Length: 317
Length: 224
Image 1 (cartoon, rainbow over the protein chains, first blue to last red):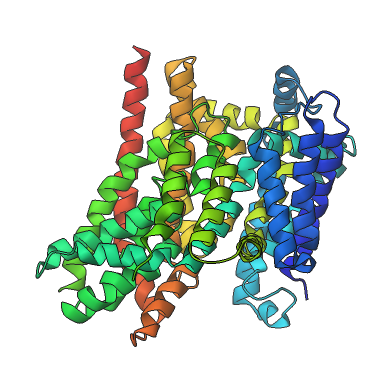
Image 2: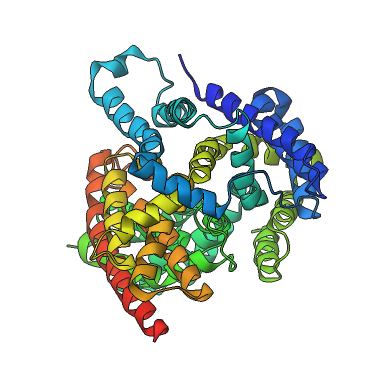
């Protein structure tokens, strides 16, 4: 069976190559920092299952130290110039999209085939991980096609990948750090305290105001945790179940489903949701790291209000 | 007696982001402080932190697309994407992004949420196309306008994903809602929950879609 560990190995080998290429890149004055940072990522992906919890913890402290004290710099791996790219674009034409579409097409069609034909019964992929595994397969197939067609230098995919990962920098690792912070918040009982505080501001007897506090609480606590998944059990325990469902007789399906979506509005407005908000800012090389959040607030606020109204009208029909 | 001091970690995070300190350090300090205040010893805190980081390695998997994307950029993919958009007479940034919003919501709603995303589709295709559409209509863009167009490209991917994926009944958030409510004795089928994601999905499309049309007008005004 192909498991997610295979993908961790593939990604780990890629980061190991980034580390080696970074460490020998004399154009970057902080080359050793970059080498150490991507090397630690490689170690996590290749050996994380065997390092033990404390070992993984030290590895994370290492990542934070290298990035946090400014030891990583921006490299400038060899690539083509703007003019060369324009020429390639004209010469190769729209066929250039085909390799780009191999990855989504493999993931898309593969997932459908695997889930809706007898193929799924074969159990060749780890359960619920098939889309990720197919994504990896798509990457390998796309690389094979590009090599057969365009014959780039052998090291080119790794150098081009390193160019992009260095443009993202430590933001590539931050989402995982924040997920780990969320786990510590949970272990320390932050959720229970927040739930208690929210409960204390609920106005007596008003269904509408209680729904509003529930929706706003979901959004705000999601903004703090960066993740609606962490907020939902807390707000359900504090308000959703005891007051809205049990107290006022609200429909549990509506309170649950739309409550979660109110949390998603919070995800659009917080730097804590780094993989959705900060990583794209780095990927698109925006000057304003909060540019994506600023573009989203105008959608998130009216949608949050809409969700509160939807719960009020649909759960208490 | 409630230990309100465990909220210190939240304050550290807010202060750290506000002071623009390096988030990697801010998050680490907040995690260690929260753990220590709640009564764990240092080894326990570091172990909890390390275990959670390791459990979330799946987040890092998406970066394996970078060598392919980088390689295609080397051969002019972004330039090609822009050229295609210049060939369409009626293409505008807003209309293009509305189309992508619809695509992203529809594919996420049938469970294909990891087939698109910021590294896979936004950087190599959507953002260059959105920029090209704006340039075609309004000529060379100033830096602020280009930033806005790129920001909206990423924002559209997020909105499409978030308010499409919950219609798919087998996604993590639906399972979480189901399990949370089940602990209180409310047994619901995933499909019963997923249908209630549809009204919000429609409203998200209408709200974000009209903002994208307004974006077209805003770019036009800035040019004059």
